[in-house]
Image (cartoon, rainbow, N blue to C red; front, side, top):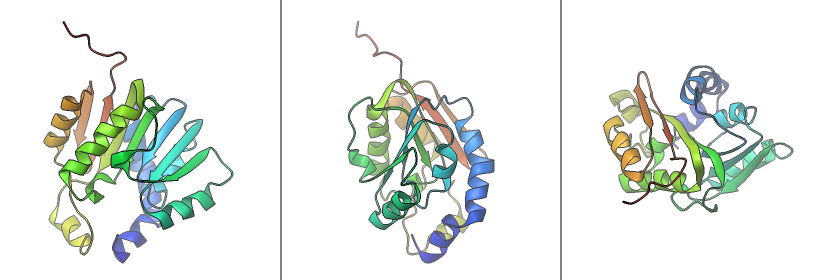
Length: 193
């Protein structure tokens, strides 16, 4: 992240906004279960809210220094911090009841990598589990704010196609001030007839 972006995302105003305006909407009715994976927590603005709503929260952060700060912050809690690439998750199939991705997909440099992250989320979800998330919508202002930074917003229609093609269903995508989405992994494999 560029310095302006890092300052905003690590600040208390962003955490309050995320925790009061975005997360309650994005997770409403999602059924987070006991074991949740948060992808790309960055400074942990969503982590603080999520860890109070599940028995065990695992966070996967690609930036080693951000992961180190999170591990220090949550060392004696229900949060496990791992460092790694969300496109190649280091977890077994069907490891989590829910997976969350909150305002991070636009930081993934390519559409192929974004798609792979969603495929990995499906793989690590237990049958009946839920992927829930939010992201920024494309705008000129955000494009300028992300100067010298990765800015690759996901088109809502493309996200719907990806999630359905991967095998999620039902899928709910809401476009307001931000993009929110929930997608459920089928409770059982579709039978081939």
